[in-house]
Length: 422
Image (cartoon, rainbow, N blue to C red; front, side, top):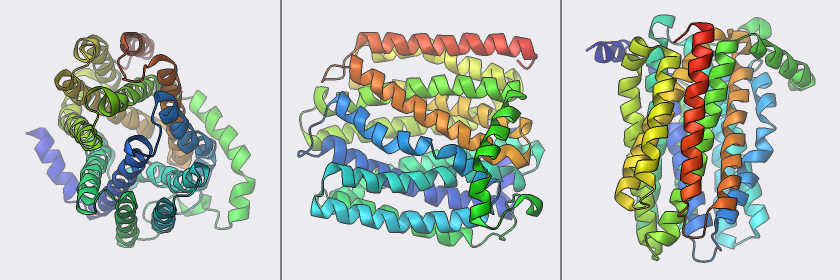
């Protein structure tokens, strides 16, 4: 099979394997940390859980450092990316230890969120850097496959990390602090793994590296404006990012709904609710894996925009039929579908951005991409907080999401015909 052949070619590339190892360890740690936060905020008996509370937590964690995203991109285009992976993961390991200590001493919520915000803020540098560095270790012929394997493998690693977090929590008598410390150990492993790559291997080129932090910060505003102007000249990347933002909004709204269903509708017991949430994560992870296998073939047949159209249109049709019963079985099938279409569309979007954006601007564009992700997710949580009842059952929310998926599909068809890329 072509997919298996290309996969073997990629895995024979030593630098690709090393970059993939950093991604797997880093995103596995992210999965552990996110589950620890979710269980502490949503499933802890001491916490008052509601859609508004979940939306507030997401806003506190995501919106502030969305403003940092463009600054991260400017710095990524000036700092050596290998060093970002090394020091970024070391810093996250230290900050995660601080979060665990705050959980143990039961501090006020604002202090806990500030600590969590610090960990996830550094995440913007690492994830954007991983995507920007990928073309440095893979040739253009295999870039689609690399975009299929690498981010999807990272997402699966995050899902596996979430599963490990549930296991650690079970072994440690439901200790969220122990789970966070386990995540810190994985962050440390990612930092050490980055040392296997050459310091200058991942770029950017030496003529654009500014070793002095002050010089890089001073150029941030100018660099951001340059990145925005550059993106306006790349309609293919702009349209793909717009469609992906809509799909991310849908994913965020349905995520809050599933959290509330697991917490209040399908079970009144904390352990049972967590088990159902774990099954939903596993189903979504299976969808991510299916996307990794299917997307290279689908892009070859349909084109990058065509595959994104198929993903959005399938979700528009199938989400209402699966979600509206508000029962665990169909909702798990919906989780699989959402994992498939969201990751499939993201692989296509990553490829469009990487192939249409020059290396000198790639870090800035991927950081803007990340900002759109965060703002869309938080906006979706805010809308869900207004619409969802405490048990999570909301027909209007499901229909709204289906309509947004249909709108994204229609927009991609129109843009694809205009640019002749379908």
